[in-house]
Image 1 (tube, one colour):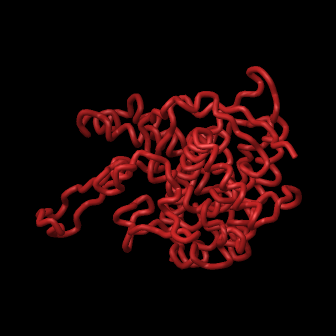
Image 2 (image 1 turned 120 degrees about the horizontal axis):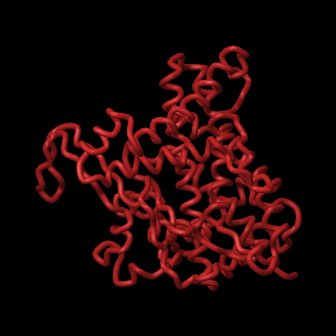
Amino acid sequence: MASLELGSVSVRSYAHEIVSTEIQSRLIPLFASVAGSEGENGVFDLQDLFRRFSFDNICKFSFGLDPECLQLPLPISDFAVAFDLASKLSAERAMTSSPIVWKIKRFFNLGSERQLKEAVNMVDNLAKTMIEQRREMGTFLTQKDLLSRFMANIDDDQYLRDIVVSFLLAGRDTISSGLTSLFYLLAKHPEVKREIREELDHVMGPTREGLATASFDQMRELHYLHAVLYETMRLYPPVQFDSKFCQEDDVLPDGTFVRSGTRVTYHQYAMGRMESIWGSDCLDFKPDRWMKKGFFSPESPYKYPIFQGGERVCLGKELALMEMKCVAVALVRRFDIQVLDPERRPQFVPGLTATVRGGLPIRIKEREG
């Protein structure tokens, strides 16, 4: 059902409308208001801004709820804090020396497990309240958000909550992670930024006035920008490793026997940096490796498993790429984003998605002309 919904023209148009509105009414005005500021007042954490931006978007798309995290003066949303804490503590479970440790803490409701329970309850309560209000008012029949679309076919409120929280997890931090890595790499490679701007001028026209981002049709013509996003995620995948469990006994193509129930983990971050897969220039940021005769040329999803592959391919792949393209178009066209220390290699904190330790401090300047 999710695959059909997310693949429909109406849902993609709705998502594009949400993202474009957030860019036009909040992201661009915020960047414009601080552009050129000097001293500490002019330094911003780009990762934090993108997390706020993507959280607003995914909440509006999933719930029809606007947390206004990107609204000046950048308020802190209790829901966003609870959601972040639940994600962080869930990921830290995997780092304990044994599952027995966190299970004992959960049994006695101690420490991090108590915090996790409280954070999850807050997320649960909001989701349940939204579902109950929609049912009482009957508005889910006329609303466009994901929750309303599923409510038309599903009566199990707990299942509805799980679906929506899953989309929040999948669509919030992955977007902000991909965008943070993109602008970090553009700061190190100004020649790539120039090529993006040349493509934007060719597709959208040289003027930067009017609409902040590209239309659906224009985005399909942005082959080089598409290649830049793919190359960014090859080196810095938003999800750095992933695991599956073998459903039944199987044999891999190289003859390895995998018993039913075995956990199999693949490491996208490592795969993107392997010479045996990508060649001797595997550590270089080269968007042109994705281009053939001026057009984007994809690789096998098993060579590039950022969006997974086969029956488990990411349901929100096209929506995620659309959102990242919209942001890149709007910001690259109008602003010069200067990373304070572009030579400092990102270090990541433990989590479900790749989050840069200490964020990405930047200064913003309006482009001249």
